[in-house]
Length: 197
Image (cartoon, rainbow, N blue to C red):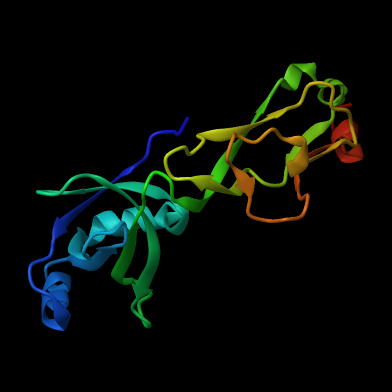
C-alpha cells in the first residue's frame, strides 16, 4: 500500500493574470495553477520558503502530493512544471495536475533490501553495492507502493540483481524497458583486507 502522501499547502489566488502573479511574488508567494481531473483550473499561491524547502528535498516533479487548499476538497496532484527565474534559478510559477485514483503516473519508488544475514556472499565479507536506491515505476495513483523489496537470501559474491529479479507490486511496471541493474554483491577489496591485519 502507498506510504504517507505528503501534503502540499496552498491558498486560492484571487485575480488572474500578470498583475495578480506579481502581487503574489511581492508577498513572498509563488503563483501556480491546478488543472486537469475534469474540473476548472484553480489559480493558487504557495508560500515561497515552503515551496523552496520542498524543491530542495528533491524529486518534486515525481512526488505525488495531497493538495490542501482552504475551501476546496483535498486532491492528489503531481507537479508538471516549475518555472524559474533565469538569473536566480528560483521558482516563479508552479503547474500542478489533478489525478484521479485510476491515473497512471511515473514515480520514483524506494528500494528496500532484506535478509542480509541469509546471503552467503555478505557473510563471507562481500559488500552490497546499491546501484539504484530508487527505481522509477509507472504506477496507478490510487495504489502507490511505499517501496519495492529485494530479497538477498542466497545471494553470493558476484551476483547481480536486476529489475526483472524483483517482484513488483501489482499494476506497477518499470519506466525503462531494459533489465537494468539495481545492486550487486562485490568481493571485499584487497585494500580492506590488508588494512584489517
